[in-house]
Structure formats: C-alpha cells, structure tokens
Amino acid sequence: MKTPRPPLIEMRLDGEIIPPRSLWPARIAAWAVLIAVLAGLAVLAALAFWLAAALLPVAILAGLVAWAAIRFQLWRSGRGGNRFG
Image (cartoon, rainbow, N blue to C red; front, side, top):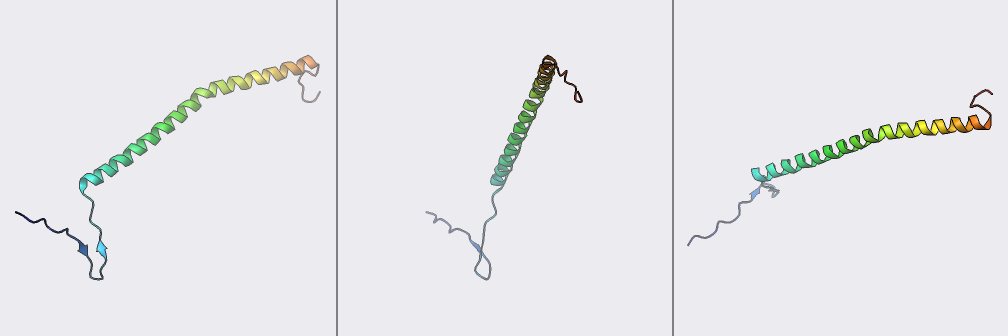
C-alpha cells in the first residue's frame, strides 16, 4: 500500500512561504470571468445608448409641442410673443 506524499511547500531562507502558482485551468477560468463581465458591461452600455437614441425624437417632439403651446398662449393673450413688445 502506498503512503500519500506530504504536500510540497516552497519556503525561502528567511521562512516566508512562497504561494503556489495557480494552475492553468484556474487562470483560464479567471480570464473567462473577466471577459464575461466586460461583455456584460458592453451590453449594458449599448442598451443605455439605444434607449437614449430611441427617446431623443420623443424629447425633441415634446419640446416643439411645449414651444408651440407657449407661443399660442402668448398670441391669445395679445402680446404676440414678441420679445421687445
């Protein structure tokens, strides 16, 4: 029956333990998580840009309607909407 080997611990001369290097699957998983997070952030940024672009015509139309309503009210009050008059 084989006895299990003791764990290999690397230590410097002053007694400080050198942490083991991570294995390549762990490094690949870390990079995959990082890429997935960056892709998620890119999707959120694209969604925010799309929403802003979709609402821009609505905001412009609302501004035009508000401007027309103010001009109409000034016209009805008899001031005509003239700045100097």
